Length: 131
Image (cartoon, rainbow, N blue to C red; front, side, top):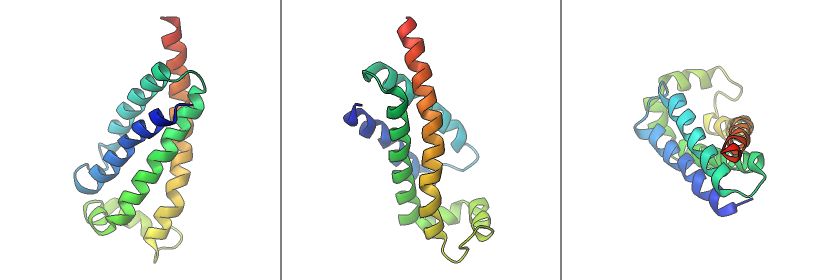
């Protein structure tokens, strides 16, 4: 695995973490993540010498770290601009500890998105090998 590439691609997570706090509404976030996943899958397939799935998986794990850290550090700004998420947190376990809830759910989301990005990277590797 190319650790340098994984770190570099994880910076999308840092950018998205900060952007979702201050700029990006949750309504367009999934579209942006799809674009980011396609870009990451392309570069993993292009620059990795194997283990494409694992590289994609670890990019998403690193992304989840950046996003979770951004949302926890800038919690008040995040909640102020994301009322749906604030409402959802009141209905989850630990409604009195939303930062702790974010800390616990962030890695779970990272694992799930890692499976998706890993699959994207694996498919991209097969497509690029055919060319």
